[in-house]
Amino acid sequence: MSPRMRKQIRLMAGLWLAWTIAGLFYITQDSVPRLYRGQTVAWKYVFVGWMAGMYVCAALTPAVLWFGNRWSVERRVMNAGFHLCLSVVFSILATVIEVPVLLLLGVFPALGEKVDLELVETRTFAGRVVYLRYRRASD
Image 1 (cartoon, one colour):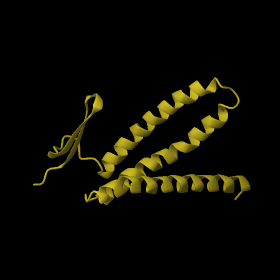
Image 2 (cartoon, rainbow, N blue to C red):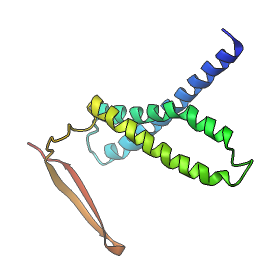
Image 3 (cartoon, rainbow, N blue to C red):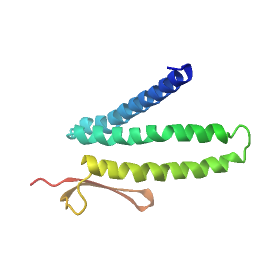
Image 4 (cartoon, rainbow, N blue to C red):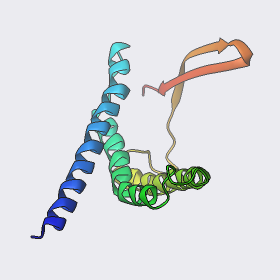
């Protein structure tokens, strides 16, 4: 194996490791507040949901790095607008890929499936902002 290929493999492994660590971090950010409030955590859905999203981002990272190197902001400030447009494209593309993957993995309820909810809490804040918290209704 050539040194260049070894370097590429190391880079890809490092990217996947970094996104895995980020996913584990977000899993704790999602689950710890629920545990603190005494709520149950659907570990399968939290884990699969976050890790699928992270791995979609990991798959798009080489393209993001290539664009960043090709049109560097340090070289031309005008490239900042291009980076802004590409960040919007990245967000849309990641969502377009992630949602069907999560549907296939069963993280979201199937389309058309009704989910009964019950209102748990409401709060009204300044500026007429209303916070509503729901949970699945008990059978």
